[in-house]
Image 1 (cartoon, helix red, strand yellow):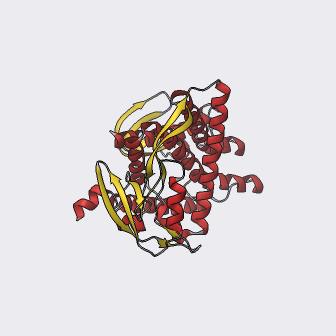
Image 2: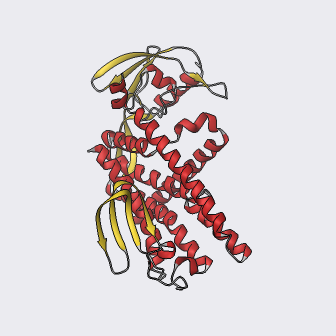
Image 3: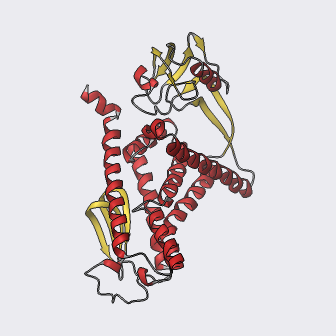
Length: 363
């Protein structure tokens, strides 16, 4: 069920993105002939008065189709309500609406979390530090046999405290013991295991093991005092997620060799969502907001076949007073589409082979 919940959230975020494009076009009277969630074979479709609505077999994607380049369309090519015949500003609104929809949705999800779950008000700490995610299969943690969901109880025989000092204590030990073996005691389910781990050395001369660390225990919540508190806290969380996401993309670009293994495809995203659902279903709100913001930022990048690439063409058109030749735009977009599809297939294959169930089968 946790996997289905993660897939449902990802499909919902894609639906929100495409709905943004769709509504921005329809509210301006622009023709839209297709609205599809998913790719591949059609499972269900409905032909409306002006638009075909479809649900396809692969839910991790979607598109809004315009009749501008549809050879079967009966709409005259000079129709003022075709997307390509609209002013640049109208087209900018349509292209950017998916990104805006994802950002608005993320903020509303965070506000809904504070309303339904409550306001964080402390933590019931238990000894140790939780490992919600192992970053990659070639990390020190993976080599030592650490898995998502493990709780690190002690290092070199010293137990980690039941307080907010557990994670800083563990990080300090790891950072100061690069390329030196450390004995860990971990809890996995109802079993206690002893593992040896050797932290890798990073560019700063510090040790790292390639995991995320969360406090071990359960958060305490209180009811919101008023609606203004909810909106303010949601805004703070929203701003923090955007900052950390942009910072992550910057690190990916500046230190590509070190961070490329952290790039996640749809399989990895679903796995992470399933782990979150298993540990604490309330965290699915934050998971949805983070993925939604990531979708928005990725799509706004000026890359071929993404919304940002189309916006870049519109900016050039606005400056030149006329669009670039169709052959240049088509070549740019087709090349980008091939590269993105290739990257997507690579990430799906890589992330699938790294799943625990697949690795156990291969062994």
